[in-house]
Amino acid sequence: MAKLGIDISTHQGKIDLAALKDKIDFVIIRVGFGVSGTIDNKFKRNADLCKSLGIPFGFYWYSYALNEAGAEAEANAFLKAIEPYRNDYSYGCWFDMEDADGYKAKKGMPSNEMLRKICAKFCEIVEDAGYYVGIYASQSWFKNQLNGDEIKPYDKWIAQWPASNGQQKGLAVDPNSKSDRNLWQFTSMAVIDGYNGRLDANYAYLDYPAIIDNMRKNDMVDLGEPEEEREEAPENKPEHSPQILPEEKPEVEIPQPPIVENIETHIVKRGDSLSKIAKKYNTTWQKIYENNKDVIGDNPRKIFIGQKLKIIL
Image (cartoon, rainbow, N blue to C red; front, side, top):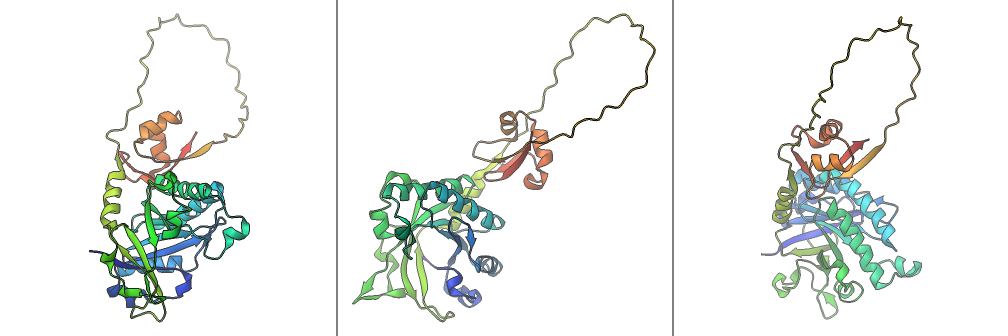
């Protein structure tokens, strides 16, 4: 059975989510927009409210990227913003690819291939960080601009608004009228008691909370026992006769230059273990664990995909 949800941003102001809680099943919240990483000024408010009210929620980022470098910048801003909700979100992370305000057209619309590469770059980075990710676009864009292999691995949130006599049907749209999509934004004109205005409304056909919960469990990396560092066996050296030492002279303390630490960041990926990571950076798993206890926790045998570990070389 399809679930009913809304997507919201600063445009809905201080929307009363408590008044809507019993009328919707989920909310997808705009995190921000653009390559400069502008955060929606209602993002934290909306996310915290959903969390406190027990409303399942997901996230989206409105893209202004014109190339892959822009998509990477947007992905990094997105990940930084949603990190506090890593274990709370349950309706995916979505990359909003459209040109509603004509920005891309004014700046020089990227080729269709580049648009797909932009989507793929954002999704790849977010997925590598351990999140469930997909792409939002209109049905027309998916059939034309985004029709290619680059985005096939990712879920699709399709916007297509049925109308009758030139008017959107709103909540009168039958969720069973479509069977070719997982997440469908079926209107921008939903009227729901508890909000004075029109809302974007969506039907979810997949059990996203179950999928993401299962993904979290599968993405937990059980390291087993970390490999112990082996000490080299002492060499069998012949004993030497005691040496006659010259008269000792007072030691002169020579000042040592300060030690400059080289610090790198490693993002945990599927198949990683502390031992494997240690070998990559020519260090020990014990040292990595000691420097990352605040991230890893009390058990050095369990790390999670997407965790950021500080590697001090």
